Image 1 (tube, rainbow, N blue to C red):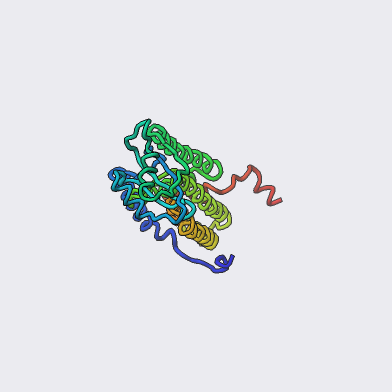
Image 2 (cartoon, rainbow, N blue to C red; image 1 turned 120 degrees about the vertical axis):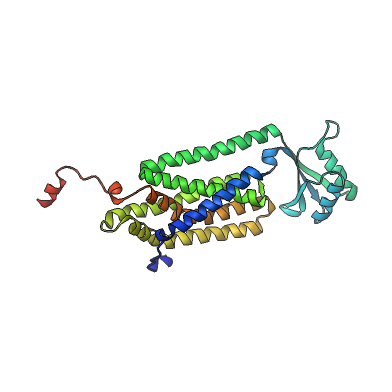
Length: 311
């Protein structure tokens, strides 16, 4: 509530042309990277084998990577899992046989260097399952956006609904684009983070839209741009505090949570930042560009209401 004590008078809508140009540029770079470089899909989508092993002492990850590389597993991903004694090894599609499965090969290679290695867990994801996960993940995002479009259109007005969807598409494309440009691993945890970003961004957008709708009724003598600027400035304290507290939790999660959720933390942290930006600029500016005005949001006056008020 501390930030809400200040009377902000920032001309957000006056800078909407600059913000729109920046957003178009970021989306263009993201789309170009997605279609040219693609995504660095994890085992959840591409298929492969996950092997968890345990050591009696702290495992030396660099030595494990070196040994696996020397034995034909250069693409293997090695990381700690929970403690420094537990190691998770991810391997893509690789030749194996029923008599000598991939997990046995990995264990034999590691035990040649250190006999105190125990097999804890083995998981296998087939390429067909990975393909289905890619398709279902994409459909999940599309269905989510469609449901949000219907919800916002009923609750507010269709121009607001289109503005909200524009902001959500903006956030989704740029967040996925970040993973494509930097070639960060894209797995199911990252997909879950993107769906969470959609929910976070929508919540922030609806709060701003609620205040805009209220002010269109209260501030009848002001034009649409002034009403939107007033509304965004009134909600700025709440928006900043929500974003900062969420970001602090995600930063701690990134550094303390371990490598397994680094992708999740990065996607959600970046999504919170871009979602806050889009709720201010993209959603509101899109509704304004579509011609939203106070006439669209004023309550319908019943016939004869003016005569009753005069009596």
